[in-house]
Length: 221
Image 1 (cartoon, one colour):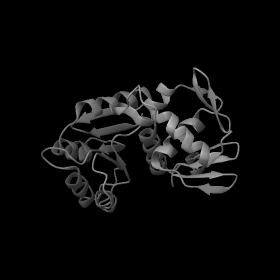
Image 2: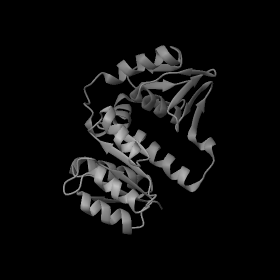
Image 3: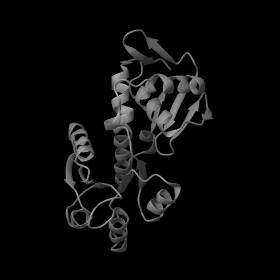
Image 4: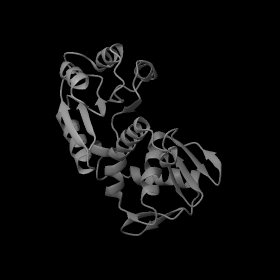
């Protein structure tokens, strides 16, 4: 059972991530400040850390820098509301393995965590792909292909396509898709799912995503 350290000072987000990871078989631990995050990361025997940047006591960049300065190779996925290009560059150049901005969908975070753990464990790259019919997603490079042709997807489009390819042929309700892709911060009355399904149909093919009246959507591939 992989042990995951969650360094997040916003209780609602921390518990959302903790409960999701626990439900998927991980052993999560939550800390709410940078000093505790650093101590746990250095001495706690964790397999990966989900790290917020805006932590009290020590910010996430400082925690990451001190970890790397002492030679720690602990995989770190940054999860933060700070999504400027300069922040992303600073995080990745500072030694982070991945960088996600809030709001986020839990399924995308889970996929990135699993990917980092697989790479750490040296598992085959084949597990980094999802395929159904002639549609493929590379979870490592976050790229999509249709009949061998690369298609450019935004981060949210990719996350939605990922959920569909994880459940091909299954009817997914709007509420399920909102929860998985837009995560803790979704509005149940929003039409954002319908909007992004239209975007995906334009890029992947109009007939690949079926509308099931009164139920949701189904990916046919």
